[in-house]
Length: 349
Image 1 (cartoon, rainbow, N blue to C red):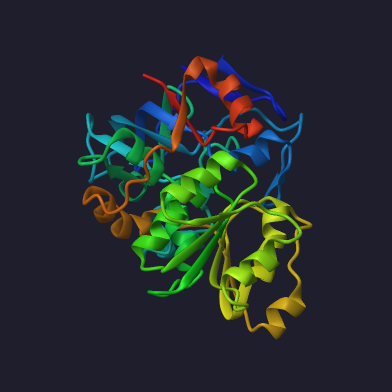
Image 2: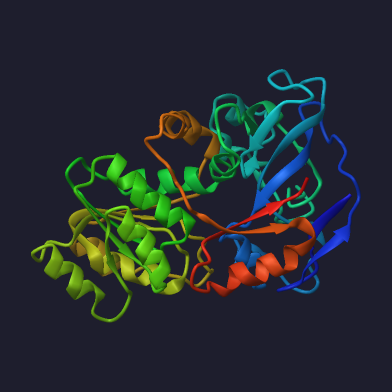
């Protein structure tokens, strides 16, 4: 098969790669239809860190990508919820499916929890075919969903919901979203769906601020006077719920000065090892701080009805389309954060 292969920092290549094989009885093989690039993929692309993994020229090569949809073409004997021919989307990561944590629905606590496309331990889906372990818990039927809705539900939309609710938004309350990539834009829309009276949206890119403004947000560019601007807009109170959706150091550092006393802050951007938060701001403002990795599968029951009913549109996020063979250019453009670049869809077959 062909796939997009990590060959080192800023070196993603369209190459011939070994076909995947079923690695367990609960696995399925998908023929990938389309996939997309996530902001967290850029940590790998930059040669930075994801968790304890540092990506460099000596990193063993692997197929990248954890956002993909496709068709089941082979299923192991312990796959019961899906059959050959089913059209499905896959969560961005999965557990083993057999331990007590997985069987009780706490997949994030599985000792074998792995994301697709970050190493050879679980090859990614920016390829013609991909092996999906723990298929019954990792796949979701795409019936009633568009291709682009399906791609967003693999990770981005679920992460937006996860991050937003952990900022504890209240009906009639105020929300700020820091970072207006796809997850942040969806977070703005979801904040209104969950009852926010005002949403403040912050990003350095004007086209992204325009998208948030079209959803009803009050938009701001980051800068040294951002906190003062938000305090002025909130009569000195600050924002009750602040959702950081970027992972950039500037975004992380901007969050706590915006939070009202007794408010909440949620961080979902992948940090670098030396990123920190100022403890005095947390202590003396009585701020609740949460961070974490989204358990995508547990977000689906909340999100799929909202999408299928039209309550959440998440429209216009895929600004560019590429064929798989042009994947290197897709990564370059996504990394550029040029005006008008929001999210990139890669069509496979």
